Every structure is written in C-alpha cells, then in structure tokens.
Image (cartoon, rainbow, N blue to C red; front, side, top):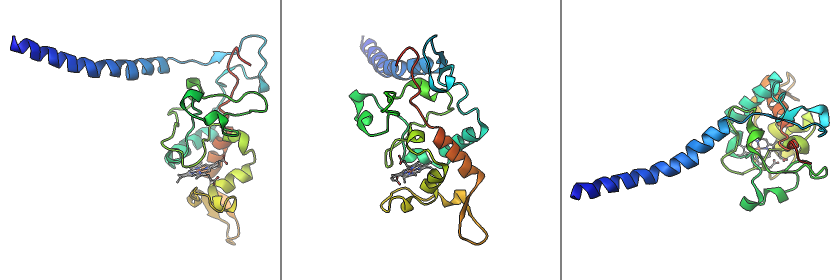
Length: 203
Ligand code: HEC
C-alpha cells in the first residue's frame, strides 16, 4: 500500500518533468527541423525576382557565409540580437528601422524560416547594442560598416561597441587600416542582413 503511493509520487514527478520537455522542446524541435522554403504564389511580385521565401540563394555567396561564421566566432551575439519579437512580447516593431523597410510596408516580425539558411539561429544573448536583423537596410555602405567595426567611436563618441581592430591591418605607413579577409566577409554578411523578405501570400 505504502509502496503504491511512492510509485505514484515518482510517476507524478516524472510526468511533471516529461510533459513540458516534450511540448516545449521536442515538439518545437521537430516542427522547426522540417521547415522548407515556400515558393511565392503566381502573381506575387517580389523585388529582385526571388522565387521563394527564404531566398534560396541567400548566403550561397561564399564570403557572406564565411562572415556568418566570423559573426559567431567574434561573439557579436553577446551584445546584438537578431530577432524582432512579436508585438505582444516587446516594442521591437516600434523601433525605427528594426523591423525592416517601413516605408515600403514590408517591416515585420521575425519568422522561424528567416533562419533557415543559417546553421545556428543568431538570436543573441542580450541587447547592449541594437538588433541587427535588418542592419543591411540601415547601413548600406561598405566603408561605413567597416568604420562601425574598426572605430565605432569615430561615429558616436559614447559608443559602447568595442573596436574589432584585430580584424584590420595597418598600412605600411601606419596611416590607414586595411580590412582583412575576415573583416570583408563579416561586412558582406552584415550588408546581407535583411530579415524582412515578403512572406508568400502576403503584401
Ligand atoms: C560589448 C558589446 C558589443 C559587442 C561585443 C559588439 N557590439 Fe556592435 N554595438 C554595440 C553597441 C553598444 C552599439 C551601439 C552604438 C554604436 O552604434 O556604436 C553597437 C552598434 C553596432 C552596429 C551599428 C548598428 C546600427 O544600427 O547602427 C553594428 C553594425 C554592429 N554593432 C556590429 C557588430 C558586430 C558585427 C560585432 C561582432 C564583431 C559587434 N557589433 C559586437 C555593442 C557591441
């Protein structure tokens, strides 16, 4: 009799751990790993004639794919997120430029498929700096992007962003900084960050 109650207790505790694990980890994991690109329906025109969402050619360019790895290796995700939260969970959509092209009515929240081409979704740990989901729309010039990485205080004297000088080489006369291959690839990746691709069947 006593043992019976003990067994029930253990079963109850096991269930209390197992159920949330199944529904919060296993089920979303299975749903997330079966995502495929969705082709645009006939008649939906998308800039650049992209055939599907997410753009199947995204990060095929070797350099921006390498840059994606530099982004991970340099720990950019410790200070920068890449997720525009739904409005019930935060005010991201009201921050200028965060959701993407507001003027074209394309600004939106991040969807699971936006990370389909990336091995690891760079969600980020904290937001010391701004969200970078759509930084490719905000900063469009290579030079400016390099300056953000090599000398952020020249753009904003109070910037809390560290200078990533080890990604740059000094020219022989010590006057200029020359980007290394890693810096060029990282900039290719950052310029490509546009997580506001129109969703199939919508605007
Ligand atoms: C210690 C925290 C920290 C780390 C690590 C960090 N950043 Fe930043 N970053 C910031 C802060 C704070 C700002 C805002 C101030 C500014 O614009 O300089 C910023 C701004 C930026 C901007 C300009 C964004 C905009 O919308 O204007 C870019 C681009 C950027 N960071 C890229 C990177 C990349 C790439 C890395 C990794 C190589 C990185 N950051 C690592 C703190 C950080």
